[in-house]
Amino acid sequence: MHHKIRAISALLITTFVVISPASPATAAGPLTDLTGAESPEAIGQVDREAVRTIIEDLHSSPRRSNGAYDRSAQYGSWSSNIGSADTAFCGSTREDIRNRDLDEVQYKANDRCAVDSGVLEHDPYTGHSIEFSRQQSPALEVEHIVPAEYHYDMIGHRQTQKEREAFYNDPENLILADASSNSSKGSSGPSEWLVPDNPSYVCTYITRFTYIADKYHMPVDPADQRTMLRTIDTCDNTAEPNSAALEHSVPITPGSGPYWLALAGLLAIVVFTYLTLKKRAKR
Image (tube, rainbow, N blue to C red; front, side, top):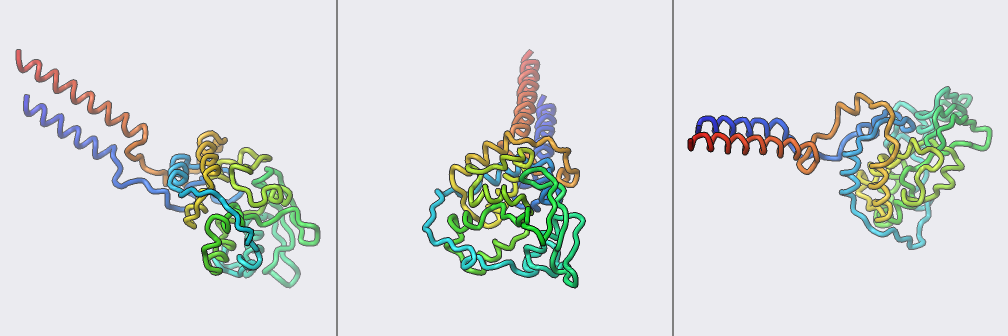
């Protein structure tokens, strides 16, 4: 009987090694792995488990304004080729984002560093197609997913000018969006504004907000954190999976349902087999 028990033990150990992760899961990684989409306005299948893990790990602190926020003085202006979305493009950060997100791009006469017109095929905040023209009052604005004032209230007031300007010009925190939607959002966090005109973008929005907060070690208001956690489990996530994102799926970790169910089932089989063999040996 003992050799049978040893064989069962060996099976248990081997199976445990197979189903257990080689290392703890981590939320760090490319933004596109989390959103399941390459372009900022695209809607992919977000990695809910990874995003939830990041949200849970974020530090939370009540948002307080000391009335000292001054965007131009504290965050500067659009930089040129600093953290650029396209290092081959010569324009400022604002022009860089226009060049990245627009289709049918036309440049100013004798100035390929400035976008003159283009089309945003799928505005993330409305879902509509919107034309951009420099000559007209802009219907599109370069928008910060995590607003600069929110960042300032939570952590920016303790940072250097260089750190604030790096945040302000980070292309991962910038998208082209409908100007009126951007105005209605203001400096709100997710608990106050959550893409009301385009629910299909909510999962992506929460993911991008979460990613930036984590990237800059920025606390989030407790109400925002609760909203983010609740929303990531309930938001529309029905877009077709992005194969590249699925290749980078986060491994199962202890504490997740499938892992413990598999282990519990295996242990039950081992115990049952052991007791059966022991009972037979006594006969």
